[in-house]
Length: 58
Image 1 (cartoon, helix red, strand yellow):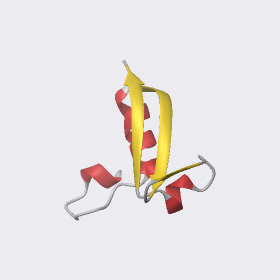
Image 2 (cartoon, rainbow, N blue to C red; image 1 turned 180 degrees about the vertical axis):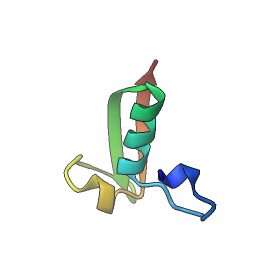
Image 3 (cartoon, rainbow, N blue to C red; image 1 turned 90 degrees about the vertical axis):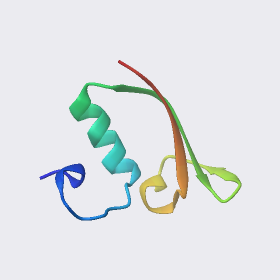
Image 4 (cartoon, one colour; image 1 turned 30 degrees about the vertical axis):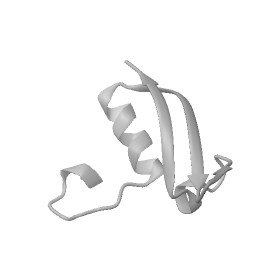
C-alpha cells in the first residue's frame, strides 16, 4: 500500500513524491531542493530537504 492510499496523515518525502509521479506516469524534468533559504543537492534531499520544487510533464 502506497503512502497516499492509507488513512493516516503522512508528511510526504521526496521519495514518496517521485514514486507517486512514476505511478501516475508523470515525468520529473527538473527538481530543486531547499533547507531553509539554501538550495541543497539531491543526495540526501529525502532526509534534509524542507521543501522541493519540481518541473513535471506528462
